[in-house]
Image (tube, rainbow, N blue to C red; front, side):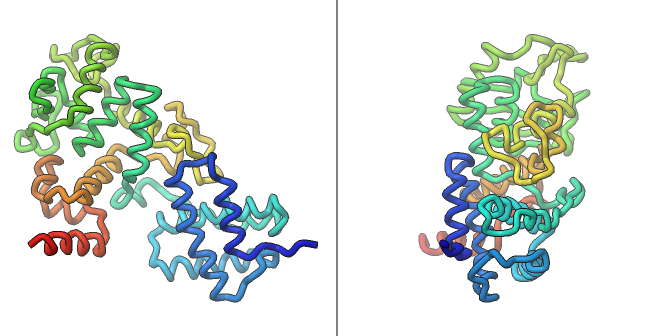
Length: 330
């Protein structure tokens, strides 16, 4: 009779089993989260997981929340991964097959996450790769590309006309106009530089996929539909669809989620995010790439104070290391 593997072996077996099923970045996330569970087992002298009970799961949850000083959203991610891990072990007979059901499901409301949720750089890159491969130069492709590259609000993206795009000089100009107001009015007007790659995709969209139409003001919207200018809610639906894990080939970590990336139910997926979360993730991405805060502020039309308070998701350690890099070059 073979012995049961210890917690670290179980973790390795689980991660190996997921290779090819999920992206490398997802595997790294699962490994990071399960490292804490393995650490907890070590601290409690648990070498054989076969004896785990629901009470142990509850104790781990409380320990992890305090140990990591976790937010509700972060705790949810930790427990969702633990549930999937225990379900895998249950199928192998290492733990009770019903133990995974004892992992509590942290219910999140959109309002719980409004001030903290953002899309990660890895997920944004995976979405853009999927769009580039399977939905090249479609209206959804161009919308998400500009949302990520310009850090613009959904209202600003909706305001864009075809004439606001300059292919030769490679920039897009956000303007305040009747019917498509910017959040900060005329002071929010700004040109934003674009890369060669971004312009090439927009050019192909305009040539091959844009629906030729005008809005009620006689203007030619960049994001058009058969009815005229695409509605904000349509853009939000695009965002929920594109950020649902199933769109980029991942599985949702929330067991109860049955959403598919079809635009009909993806807004119900706990792992899909709103356009504002894309904006927040984009801003954090540029800050992590050492773009000066003043430049990010101007590009995204947000004051430096608001940028620091509501959008900058870099940790204090990240900021310290970036300052260190500057000091090393002085």
